[in-house]
Image 1 (cartoon, rainbow, N blue to C red):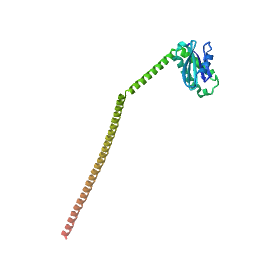
Image 2 (cartoon, helix red, strand yellow; image 1 turned 135 degrees about the horizontal axis):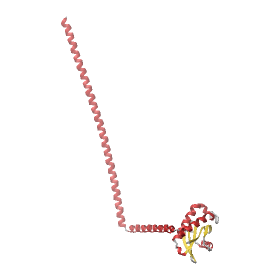
Image 3 (cartoon, helix red, strand yellow; image 1 turned 90 degrees about the horizontal axis):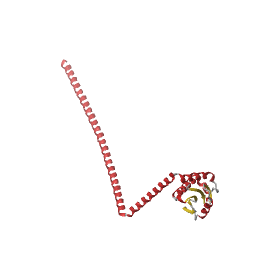
Image 4 (cartoon, rainbow, N blue to C red; image 1 turned 90 degrees about the vertical axis):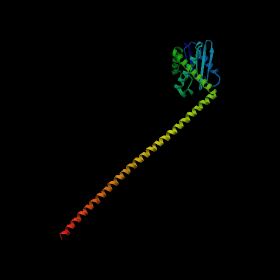
Amino acid sequence: MTILYALVARGSVALAEFNSSQTNASTIARQVLEKIPGNNDLNVSYSQDRYIFHVKRTDGLTVLCMADDVAGRRIPFAFLEDIHQKFVRTYGRAVLSAQAYGMNDEFSRVLNQQMEYYSNDPNADRINRIKGEMSQVRTVMIQNIDKVLERGDRLELLVDKTATMQSNTFRFKKQSRKFRNSIWWRNVCFDISSTGGCICCGCICLSWAYTSCLFNITTFSTKKGDMGGSKIGSLVFHN
């Protein structure tokens, strides 16, 4: 088994631990806690015979494990990061005021499970290797960006092209808006013209109908007058 002992502490106050070995790892761990300098976040390792004590301190919470010296650093520190996240997620601000070994009954089982996982499951190392490769890719990308920034002439050319594209886009939008407005006004004028034409045609038809009606009335009156005159003449002629 690669990871043999694990401890979670606030400063020098142990909150939870688990020991799977027949060693005095707990005593040595407390000595390590007392010798850790300052209060800043850190990742550090201490050797003791054929074992290595790996320590991770973040926001005042210290997570420590003892592993074989052949285990390297990747797996132990991945284990410490995992334990730190689980502990904070489980207890939150209670960590700040917890008594010594206040979480030991519950969290020691979590320490045991994760120690077995990171020591025996090959997926643990595979996942951490992928994370390491992703970190390397991110570093390469940052280096590539730095190299681009060093070539100011190419960067300025890129900025100029971008500005030209933005200017062309703005000009196209402006022309499109003007064309759309002209089409709208043309349609409005066409509608007005059509309406005016219909009104004119209606007026002409009404005028023609009115004229025809007057003409018919006049013609009818004239004929009636002629007929009346003939009757009177006949009456005079017989007298």
